[in-house]
Length: 131
Image (tube, rainbow, N blue to C red; front, side, top):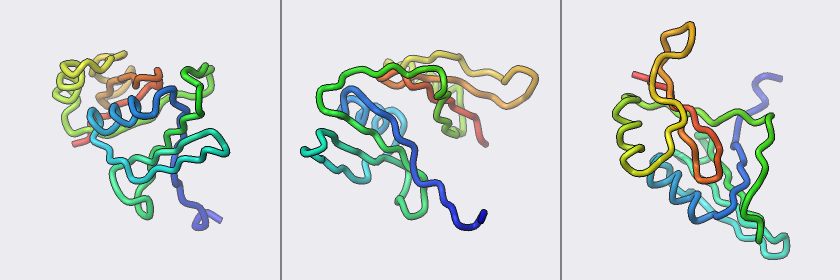
């Protein structure tokens, strides 16, 4: 069975679709790949990523008409992105007004260097330094 699955996307519900698309494209370098507005269902989907959906896992942002905020609960942890220079990345994100919730540094009991940022809806994004 292991060869029959592929990881397609992760979905996040957002309160302001344009604000969220702006965050992920401007600050994190993603591209909006496609969008589907479904008026009968009262929602819009936007798919963003770093490459074509046929070869890359993507992020699906879901905007439900009229819903501006969501309770995130305690089950969801974070998204994770690799970056080549975490210190420079965080400096640039901070200068652009992005909220850094954990400054860059090694993980406890390890050597991997990580940081955490937050998107406009409060979702946590882990940055992992990958050379």
